[in-house]
Image (cartoon, rainbow, N blue to C red; front, side):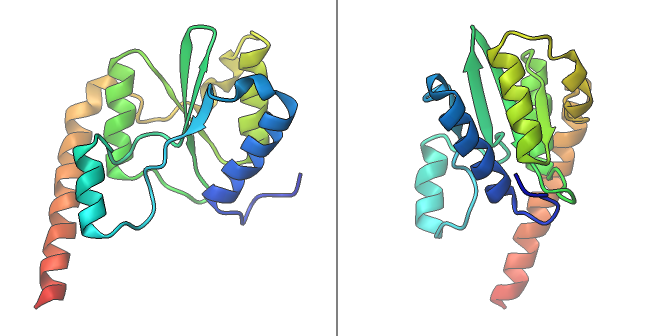
Length: 159
């Protein structure tokens, strides 16, 4: 595998999924991507929102041995956005941590540990710093302000 310092989130994720599916075909249907990002025209965005699409949902979900693991993929310089902070805290409130990985190697290693029922405590350093249920209200307010600023910017662009 190549150094992924300059790879996009999509490339990091694709490399990891390809490797995992080739090495562990039994993960098919248990490790999957949530297609939440990308540009959509306003009509499609409205339809998808009505169908339950939620901004900020983690990129990958791994369901294994009766547990759910939530994985956020970021580049080496990628930042967690306000919607993601809300989701990370909301999921922590329900008992689930979000793991942030920046390379396909990290993702592959984590998945291998989970599949082999090995202790994943040494991955605790990858848990999102926003997986804090007690801060949910702060992240919700940050997201509200973020959305308002985007709305204001769109309004200015229409004038």
